Image (tube, rainbow, N blue to C red; front, side, top):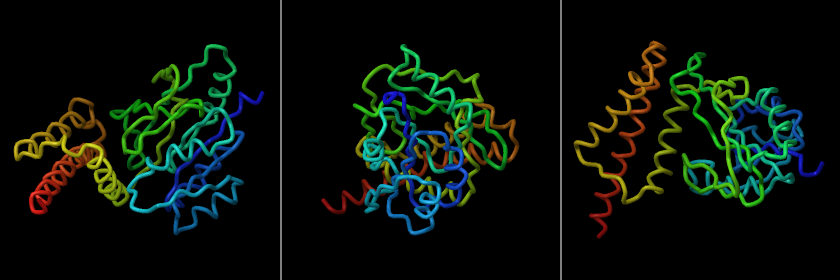
Length: 258
């Protein structure tokens, strides 16, 4: 049975807002590991109350959890790892499915799990299935230290079908404040990853955000969700604008320093 045990792993930094609900939903897994990046709120106290094993990764100048992902995964005691964000709920159906899947002889080394995103209490179907590679064998898995990347798994991977919505992560509501804060931090991390590969021309700074807004709002059906759908599409465009604006700023700074 040792190879049929699962560790649920969460990376945290000042994650007190949803953490109690997130950890409550993880009851039934063999282990819960909280990899904390030196939180200054009650994150660690909440994790302790739920019996989680807490490990620490230095915050330093990191803008996202990705630099700590591999450390968190390798801190798990069990051969299978489920990575959960601090604002995601794991359904009982998903937990049961994962245990039944690893008991099968043809279980792959990794599984993409669909995710249901919410904003203003509305399920954003235009973003579904938003599949995430979050379940895998611990041995041989490495997570690149950049935002919006997937882990590199040693072996085959499969996807949980999108039609199985009961098996999806539930991504809890984000406020406008928290979303803008994330956009700022995420773009800093992605700028480092894509340094020298962005082209912040005036045309791109106008056209790229407009295209991503149009794709989210029109092509992917965001208009069906009223103001919430409009807000999500604007955020998509704004993310791309921030990336290009920061790339331009960085290029100009490099010229001054040369």
